Image (cartoon, rainbow, N blue to C red; front, top):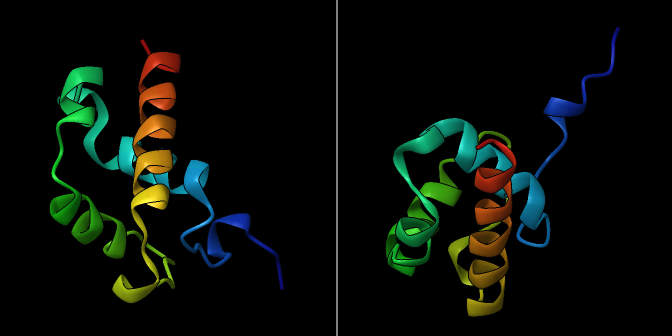
Length: 80
């Protein structure tokens, strides 16, 4: 039985992992300026849809969302 890191649970403090999943989902559809203009209500929904994400809406905070946006921008920049 093999171990796959992709099967590990993801939660709110895993900002970089979440950002990578969002970049994988949306690719270059969102540029840096568009990422920072995403409404938090939309961002929460997208995060809750991430595979293996185990956090809840109630555990979310503005700080987590800001960190995820920033990490998503870094991920986007790294792929340009």
